[in-house]
Length: 491
Image (tube, rainbow, N blue to C red; front, side, top):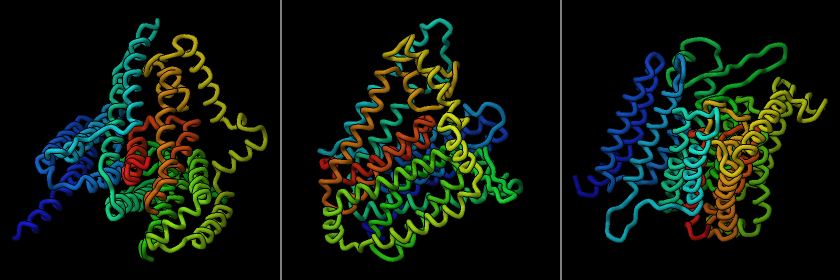
């Protein structure tokens, strides 16, 4: 075997090391149905394999590892267990932390003149949020009647982990070929596998459903009858709303995969992924997911219209065919399908009827979230307005089930400002990158970020979706890779 062939072979094996380890972790975590402690064994397996990957860091492509990390996060397991799922949930988080640390070791080059994984500017706001979390937790413990529980301490881990994921994704530079192979393909594969897993949840009982419960918590099911279809499937996510919002955030990136496709086969695969993505949002029955998806898709094409002249030049330079006609046909087809299906979806028809009768407050779930949010925010503002009352898991894990009421209650006005500043910095970078892009790939990814961020922020009005480490990891990987693909200095 020649030396070059040996290097290629080592790279193939090394690049497969972490995904294979994560797969073993999936299987081991599934055993937690009967014994949650087994999940710690899964963590040990992942940690050992990740450590082994560190020894071959010079032969592993960080782009391949990030693509595998994105795919695995979309398909991340959350086994169903009897009793409190906290131990299993945090153990799965430990698996992902081990994977992220292993990729960090792999991506940090030891050669003279090369640097380690660095922090992108928005990450500084995550560092500040970590400090605020510690301060708010300490201040909250001084409030009479407040107690600190183990779940509160997990919040100290959340922001540093998010910072690590963002730093990993934004560290390596990406060429057009690397985006195709290590970003777009894993993303589309994740959408197709997510669709298959969701379809397998349709039967109410049976071998397939019970088998899936070894890997995922199937909290909702589907039912129908008398012209009414009730879909509330959660796929690989913790609940149906999480799946709907996560897929809405992914939608502009999947559309970008279609926009940058060079040949008919690639466009066909991307078109199928777009259809599957929309179908998954529909299957989730998430009203917030559909609103977020409409916002994301509308903004994607709106930014395309704003930068139309520049995008046309970049597309011609890249030799990419136009897609306006295909987009119009696809939009018309989607509108037709929705017109035929929506009247039979109980959750959507009921909500529309309530909105017509009495406005947003006539919708029971919105009214409950609004009343709870006002109550919790008023309590925090009266006691500790600047830094909040800490995670307060013993008080209520949901705190109004609203991203902004959670932030105000836990971290106060200052923490909420830092969280919004984090997103504002990302948005400004993407906006600058859109108009300074040197390739159509860069422009497409910048448009995706500009579309996904507002959709996620609007969705936060009905749920603390960024508190889900699965959703947050996927979003930060997408944003970080898009930033790195724009050449960093552009953004």
